[in-house]
Amino acid sequence: MKKTPREGSGLLYESLLRLETVEECRRFLQDLCTVSELKAMEQRIEVAMYLREGMIYQDILKRTGASSATISRVNRCLQYGDEGYQTILPRVEDVWKAQKDHES
Image (cartoon, rainbow, N blue to C red; front, side):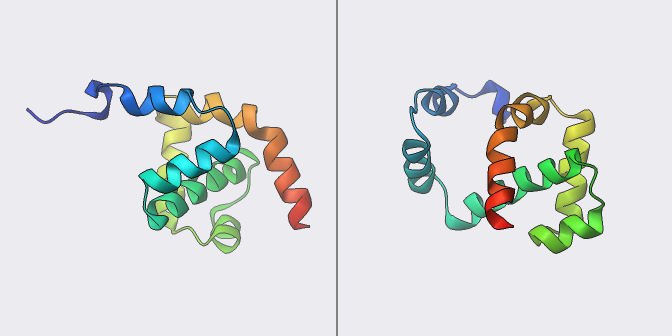
């Protein structure tokens, strides 16, 4: 029987929780993931933040380069997912605002 992510050992999730700094997290994820995987995850969190702000798909596509399929998938997760985005997005709002201010 094929295991779903929820049936995993939890080692990955426990590992993430034990990281203490952004730099530790960055280094761990760089070792764990490919450059493409990291870019995809970074893009999805940005898409989620823009969707949360009410930005339309076309503008998100222009800002992030995400495909409409990716934007749609993130939106479905925001609406009907396991509430992972709803948990984390408010917690990183200050980081998001600082990043946007820095880019301006």
